[in-house]
Image (cartoon, rainbow, N blue to C red; front, top):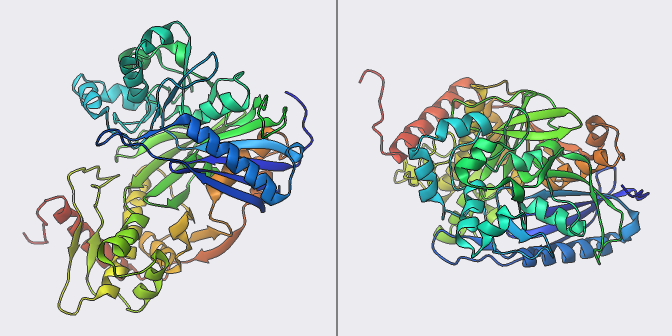
Length: 504
């Protein structure tokens, strides 16, 4: 690897709607930040695509603008970290790097029938045992299979070794290295339906089931280390090490310094993503959670359990855009604080079905417990309670599998003090909030710093993480129990099930 003496770290956060670049100091300060959005493409109902060239352009512009904002020249960058939308699949030509099809986004449902077929053929248990995942169109395995079957000549060219498959991290490493390195890290590989959890290798049996040739696959590498160096990139000098990669949720776990077994983080965005550090051995969930690789540094591998609720911040957006009871999302906290409780109102925001641990696509939203005295403030408070109670469902499922000790939070809605206090109260956990909520990019920067030798260990990299606020449990056991019972009753109604009361 080419030596580089830069002391700043560049983090590239390649997300679903845009690419963000941050230039960071080793103390965790963000010196420059820029974001560039790119178009979403919806060629058919249920199909979601990205144009890889537009993503690459968004990365180029965001990196250039972040460097300018920081007043930092390219040679001052000592390491590059990449974090990315995880399951989005890209297929491109090895000779020249041209994509042969738009990227198929993690939200895309075009392979749902294929997944149902795989399930009917009896592959569910094998896939769960080997990968820790469920058979679902969410993951990238059936996406690349679809491209091989539906792009003219793709399967023949793939078998001949002419095409390369990867998630967005692989595509960016390929481009940044001038087409010299085709790699993905273990956290992204663990989301493909192809990778063995135990030995972190591609599984030939699963590749045969999904009809994907090994010739298209990237090399699986640790999340921190000498992965590639920049080469032939106009907006960065040659020789900068690309030394950290992690999928977005795993990067956030690392970026919160959740290094101990039992540490859990929740990212509050459109939905809520909860990830628990389960230590050095994978735990196959019995409660509808996903088992995944958190990260690998050297020979040290950390595993995690993951669950998500589909609607978190989107529930607040619905109050704003659908009902018009607030003008902007940040107004919800003051409105919810104007009443001392939700007065028995319970809102289950199953506006897109229910995610883990329920996994009920047929569930629909429900508001219960309203009276003549119910007003918009009660609904606002019930909405914040719903977000916290959904996250608590995930935490409770995790408690059945592994110890849970503390909760660290990030994402836009984590700025809401009332929501964070409710989260602590309902979950019975201390909630810790960092100074900066953009922990996904910070995790990529920390991994890159370790991989480039800027930091000697995760503990040293953790100097980039500074906790600003702590929320301790204030709710009594009786109140917590009452809230949970009302919530569980509402969940049953949402799913069309009869509520069983004591004595019935």
